[in-house]
Length: 112
Image (cartoon, rainbow, N blue to C red; front, side):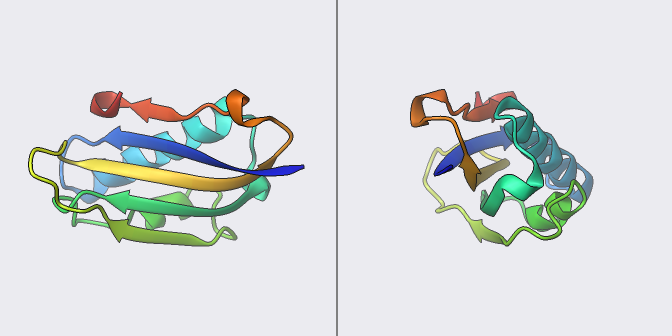
């Protein structure tokens, strides 16, 4: 068993609790499915949001899709001029049997 990091991002529709929650759940579930993982395989997840997303913590949504025992941390992305707005990013540290080249990093909606 190896420890690997998996990246992902999704651009959400609006700065609303519903949009941020929905996008975070979609992103995490896609990361898990594309990599054949369960929440028990996840060591921790760092979730970031662009500075324009302030309606809810992305971690609150993660708890609703099975991450209640996973250590989660939210942070704000640095505010770079011209950066894509309304983006939630994730970096999950997981245990897996697959090699680095087999990891599926996930980018959804405008973050593709």
